Length: 369
Image (cartoon, rainbow, N blue to C red; front, side, top):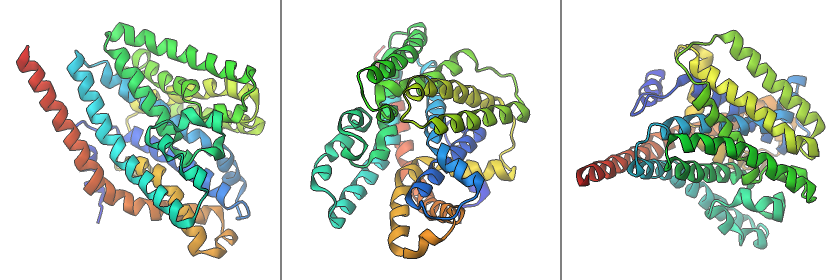
């Protein structure tokens, strides 16, 4: 139903997609899914490699942050006036909000049906307002519903901050990115010193904006037409995996990890994103194509794979006796199929609508000048 040719056409609709970055998104979401499958089925069999991936899977979100920062900075640096910034926000709203609200609605209905803690359900307004990443350090990870939305909360915060910074021109925007990196690091240090649980600081929006800003700085200072090779990308990928392994060994409850570890991973992730963006990789190469197709719908997979994991636990009571590898493949497949339907009939039409509205606003602004 969804052929490789269809994927290529979808990828090239509107602004051409970078297949390499889509593949990196696919790898990142796979890390996240393996991580959550491993945590949800702790007694499932797993290999040494899979246990390692489970322990570092949280780092997939940092790759997403670096990619987002790299791409939105490239977009904002091309804006010329306030009308362009408004267009940027319009397109972001139509890309992020509809699917987010659909997932949030499913979570709410499922929570009510299953009789979850009413106090937690009553806090759904935190998610509706994209404040998940602001609330977790104060209410705890278990005190906020649908905690997986924390990363969307961080990204929405970044879009707002980056967008308004870009209003003051490219030079001010670049300076703002540098300031955000230092500000986020300072926030983490202060919160550790104030006695906040280091693991909750991982989710705190003001302390995580540097992961996105570093991707933005990579777009400013490192992006160029120069090509990289697979050897450089492989070295960077291995460096990130090793770094995540070291941080996971210390655990995210370690104060040093909270203060310095995320900065180190952010730098490596940003460097990797730039290298992949410079890489000449054919979109018909099987690994690139498979990861790229998964990366294309990674936003849906990220928001909905938790529902699939919950369904598997209910429908297959014996699932804990399976291997993590088998469970991961099952969860990815069961999430991917509706993800492609969502992309084709829900997300992509809304993205196109957002682009058209943005162009209309730009045309009206130009006519008034």
